Length: 162
Image 1 (cartoon, rainbow, N blue to C red):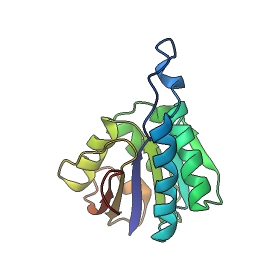
Image 2: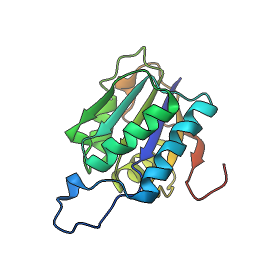
Image 3: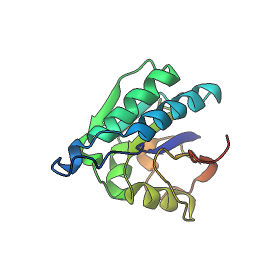
């Protein structure tokens, strides 16, 4: 059994219209919500072994807040392939994980993450910014992830009570 946590980056700023999309930072709400996700992971005993993250600034900042608050001891792995990625790109990156990794967290963007979640659990779910989905996957190897039928174990949204 593998666990996959899917996290949409926290709310980003549109304040500077001149800024390239890849370089947009978190806004005040995003900087508040991202650490909450880290605390949630720590409090529920859901610390991942690996964090894979888009290279977009808003995703990198989300990863920083989450990993600090969760007490994540590892290195966050950044991949340009995850920037505005489609589900197949997430699946390809995840499929390369070593089999001894039991729980991975991926941080990225919509619509790709919502489509990935739907592909894995067979039904659509909305992922607003800073939403976290926990999916159980009946796998012994990440390489078998494409086509796997998982189960949504939990879905946390920032505006819902925890």
